[in-house]
Length: 242
Image 1 (cartoon, one colour):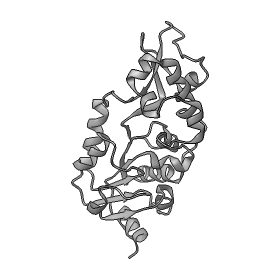
Image 2 (cartoon, rainbow, N blue to C red):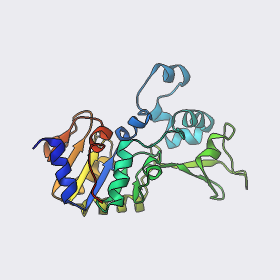
Image 3 (cartoon, rainbow, N blue to C red):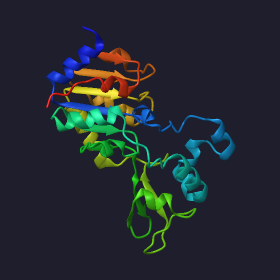
């Protein structure tokens, strides 16, 4: 049996599957990995992404933070790809119990997924640091250099986890419980080198571990099935029985 047919058989025979994904899930939609350094980035920004996207930088140089954030992180016209759509289909068919994602783009929900644990938050949630009022991503994108609350004038902060900030406890607990209780875990589009998120895979005690990533990962030797390919190309081939 080839690997595609083997994956199809696993999906056919299990109904307690959890998906854990990273940046590689969204790159097929046209969202670049923000760590990639290109000529455009070198010309426009005086700091590396990891520094700009830190809590300290947000506090000390907020206008430059938002210049980068609005340019690089608010890709609001991007659409879900075959991977997002297939996962939503799997959930609707009662196969997939949860999506755990390191991405902040909201594409899983846009595709129709309901149970999504966003480890690093979402660009679609933004809050006034003074009064707590909620604002959507379009408000941020259309704002002046510094987005401020239209009620109290306070500074608005995206509900995304910056470097130096801790992950949300409720989100982590939900993700850990989903992974720990899954029979099948599909890990895709992540190098499994960014912690603490990568450490969540250690909680899996189920039957089948499947890895889909363009490059090898530290967990390849532990997996039952490994694909070094694009996530959408693999999941897009799956047939989901209703």
